[in-house]
Image (cartoon, rainbow, N blue to C red):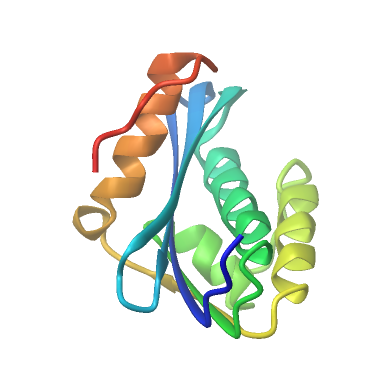
Length: 144
C-alpha cells in the first residue's frame, strides 16, 4: 500500500427504507484529488444513520493502511458530523457502539477532520453506496 501524506475520504451511507436495505460508499483520494480506492459495501438491513456510521468506519479503517499525516472526511450526514465533532451527544442505544467504533478508528490516525458537505457535493460516495445496495454483496465495478 502506498503512503499518502494527506487523504480526503468521501463517505455516504444509504438505506432504502428506514430501516431498509443499506449500503456504504467510500472514495479515498490523495492530496492531489486522485482516487486511490473506492469501497462499496452491502450492509443488509439498516437505518440510514447506521449506514452513515458504517461508511465512516469503513473509510477510517481503510485510511489506516495509507499511514497518512492527516485525513479529511467529507460526508452529508449533519447528525454524524456533529456527533463526531462533539456538538451533539449520541443518545440512541443502537448508535453508541457505532459512534465508539468510529472514534476508536479516528484515534488511530494522527489528525482527522470530519466535515459536512451538502448532498450534491457527495454524489460519488452516494453512487458507490447505491451500487453496493443493488449488488446485494456481489462484486461489481463502479464507474468514476
